[in-house]
Image (tube, rainbow, N blue to C red; front, side, top):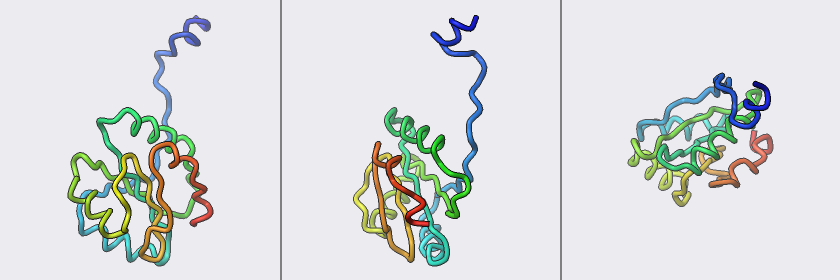
Length: 127
């Protein structure tokens, strides 16, 4: 069975790392994110649930994310919360992309990236 598992994959589910996501579902949360960013880095991951590239980047981000980072991590399903996604762009002065990661410190987006560049960001630099 070993060779077939290598070729076709195992039927056993892969254990995924659980990240400490906080769902971003309301525009009012942005004021709290801005306030909290004065003491602790805030990360916002904007994800399109219908996009294969977004799903791939999200999987890579999850597998690479260091759980020891001292940051709050927000997940935004931009298809279900389009108004929140739009307001994120206005509030933090970032052009919308998907997928996209924003790094917020002291009330401003100090860095952001989209697509494959998300996983190239050195998050420790902003913590």
